[in-house]
Length: 88
Image (cartoon, rainbow, N blue to C red; front, side):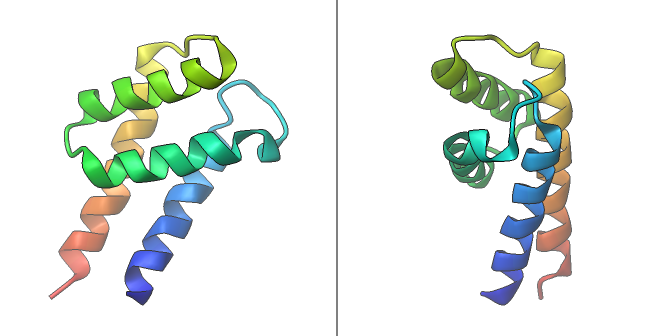
């Protein structure tokens, strides 16, 4: 369980640093929580990227380019893969 918490903290850090609209970090709490849930549900980068895009679009009524969402999706899934490869 501790490893899962560490993984989630890494995911939160990545999403916080991403800051697609250059806002205060506290501005994304809800979106980060939704993205955290999504990364545990979707294993395909494009599917995750589209979900991330829709999460932020719903909240901010602005569309983040899919390429940017794809970059963060790949990073998030790499963190998940690293967690899975370290488990016995």
